[in-house]
Length: 371
Image (cartoon, rainbow, N blue to C red):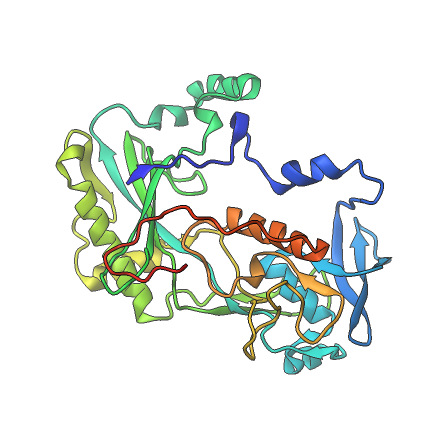
């Protein structure tokens, strides 16, 4: 475990692409921002994307914009394939179920869905140094005021300030497990806090072989798609989570933590066998909210876009979001997704890419090094 010193919370506020990019550009005469707009479909003239239709607010009358050059689809790993499918781009068998005219047969649209799954191991803290007091209502007004007026204090951090990456087995050339450490015992969504001083390790696999899909359930843009993540569908998934629990216990039992480590709250020390660990994972693993891969980049029969985000077989249409990742990365997706946007912006504008970094990095044992 190591200090997690890369954050996106300047002055206690989480950064975003809206604040980092749109806020700086919103005054430009060539930019119009529409909020409360729900994209219906992309308009095509033959094989060329020429515009977009959307619904604004509560209106049932579609609005329309035409494209002078290109349409950029940036709706994310769930909505981007859904919009493409409503527009007639995808698997013809699926499109015909909803009487959608096929613009282009592209079977990979909506397939290859990936995500990170994680769980947490919770421990009693024998010293009164956790964030448990911050959960008490009588302490929260002061915490809130310190954050609101100064951007400092406990409220200025998400508290995931330590973490790490490990290889659970020698057969993996690169880290396949990620850790986040939290100095309080509580559910990810803020519920079911343990009513005592505690801490927990969030741990999950990074490169699961499981693949799911996103598919239309209706032509109505308000309708949610059918989403199947297909979590834990390979034996490798189960083995990695068993390993993760056992390695976490080994880390937590190091002498350096003797002063702080109390009993194991969850899953509990009685949970030891493979079957018991699997049952714990089955009941407690949850999404890390990292969906990606549903419009993957590549050149095989299931690829949707090329190396510059251009949709195969069509003109004037690019996808620029996490859906184009062929394989989920080892780590959180935020920075990588922003990088995708910046790289594609350079490609669209014809700018040369930045020179490749020559920074050194650690490689375990004889693992291959990508140059």
